[in-house]
Amino acid sequence: MSDCIFCDIVNHEMDSDIIYEDDKVVAFRDVEPQAPVHILIVPKKHIPTTLDLTEKNNELIGHIYQVAGKLAEEEEIDEEGFRVVNNCNEAGGQTVFHLHFHLLGGRSLQWPPG
Ligand code: 5GP
Ligand code: ZN
Image (cartoon, rainbow, N blue to C red; front, side, top):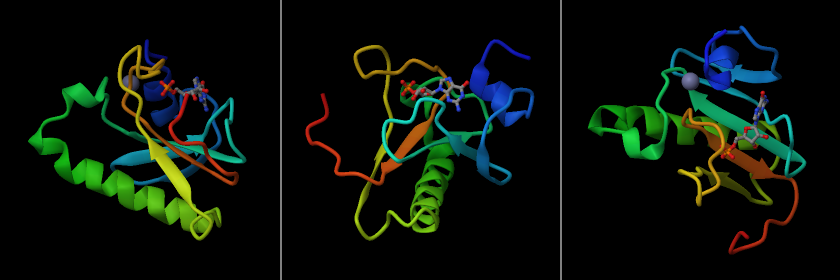
């Protein structure tokens, strides 16, 4: 176990409902789902926040969005619509400091968010 819960999930050292994995990312169901479909997509590499991204990560971020679209299709929320969200730092709502993207769908989502 490490001091980062998402690193522990990535390393299969902590239980989670992993639904997708490749050499760059892991996707698993959020433990406190805020919508019928609530999946977290995280890079395997520990990157704390959006502010830590560099040009070297451009391909990774593009890949994460491709995975989000693929999972939205698999979860059958693609046609009705879905949301991909990244929270950054405290006021942005970030509670786990390992970069992650929420894939939310299966209900009508409000805009702007609270
Ligand atoms: P944030 O608020 O940082 O954008 O999102 C963190 C998300 O991680 C929250 O939606 C929270 O429910 C989820 N989460 C926190 N701890 C765990 C965990 O141990 N397992 C899973 N599957 N999700 C977690
Ligand atoms: Zn981590």
